[in-house]
Length: 163
Image (cartoon, rainbow, N blue to C red; front, side, top):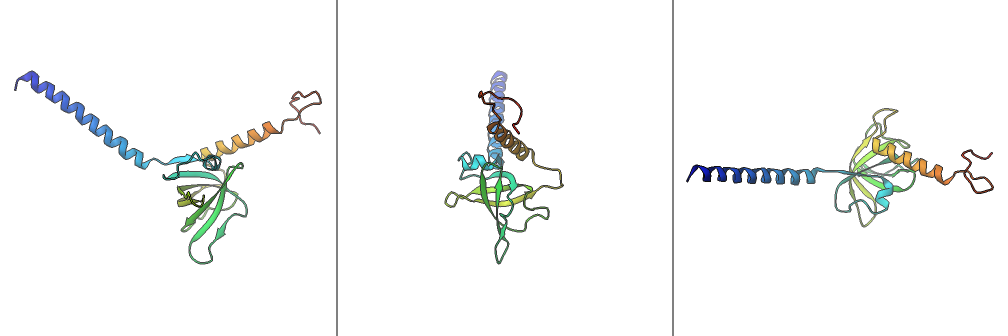
């Protein structure tokens, strides 16, 4: 084999090796990605029914129900627009409570519409809220404010609330 043929073979093998390594990396990353969804997106059907993802929101007041026996709990996560019922078998974090932010990881049960959580994460201090949850809640509040803008009798926005 001539020197030129050896160089060509080496380049071809190098390109094939890089392509194989890239394919392996992409395949392994795809299996470990956990997408984040809000309750509104889950109810709208944007979340995959056959794949793990994270769901974040606030735990609705009065929604926490514990099984009589065992470690099973159900609660509702909300973004103040839509609600999703979450089922979890296990010990909840110490900081988990109603009207606090939580993120759960698991899958959506297509038959019941409930989110089956495998992991529950609660906020870790009084001021922390996951950025995705904060953005979702802020967006919900802004949309609610837009709906309730005051209008003067001529039908034009005044920018001030009528009292």
